[in-house]
Image (cartoon, rainbow, N blue to C red; front, side, top):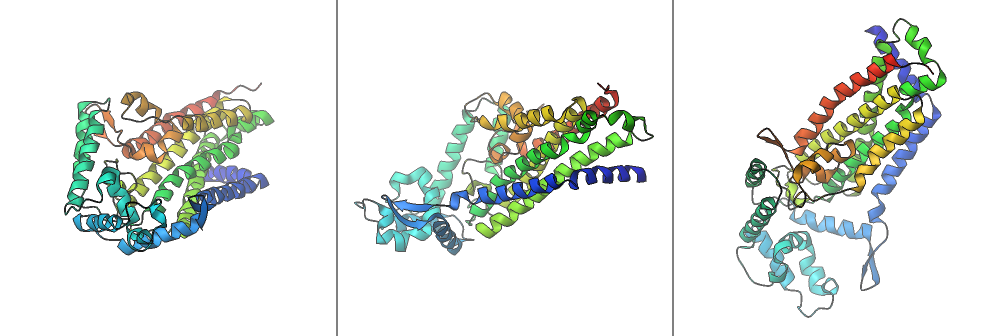
Length: 400
């Protein structure tokens, strides 16, 4: 075992003693930070006139939301929001420019947005049951969407059961920080996978192109422990890269948007999601799926590195595997479910926020499981045979 760790240390030194490794890490970290701030650049315009910066507007949104944080989204709070917006003159050309909006309605904007999802044209009507009506309208809307899905009866029944398990009334919180964290966990997985393709493609293929593999395989530990050390290095480097970028985004989103208490329901991020999770619970599950997707990508990468004679086609193939599936998105209510579910088992698909929590679970022989359970489980299960195939390819490789 001691020799195994010595070999692992050797592989780590080969990777992290290169200046290009650290340069790539710095560039990737800079890319992560810069791109996470893009949506806050520029200005907020009304009627063609710049009235504020996007960053200042976000800070005002946060300040308003935090004044209501912790309150139940019930008849009382929804009623206050509806009454506040009803105070805006009906004949206002642009309601955001009215004094009533700025002084009375603005603090309730995020609450009003959710109520207006179903009742936008009715919000001036005085009604004491806005909260009850909101949850009833949402349940009916969700049920209609589930009924239209091309899915099994068991899947539809499970989705309705999960929706019924959501506790109401919801607790209102400032959730923008959580939203961007969940979205950027996907980016952390993508960056870990892409950087892994650059750094790890040479683990096996580099030995082939340099012609050192016959010498290594002829040594005492060259066929077994060295290959296992290379595989261990590939998986652990990928996991460390994901942890680094996930931690970077966690800090970045906290400093940029701030995190409110994580007990808000997932439905505050997307009203149509049916899983009874809080945003904090959703973040933990998103991390598991992101890590699983990154490790599954690494398994394909290591197999290609062990099977091919050069690192170049490994990098090209890995890039295609990572990027191409990102260009295709499907609504689970408008396409047959099983082809979509199989497509979502590709590494970059299982890291995507929408694919993790959208109402598209897996019906496995009568047991209906949510994606955030299936994705990491499938990733870990597939990593084992792919690693075994990579080990076999390395042992059977014939020098050119």
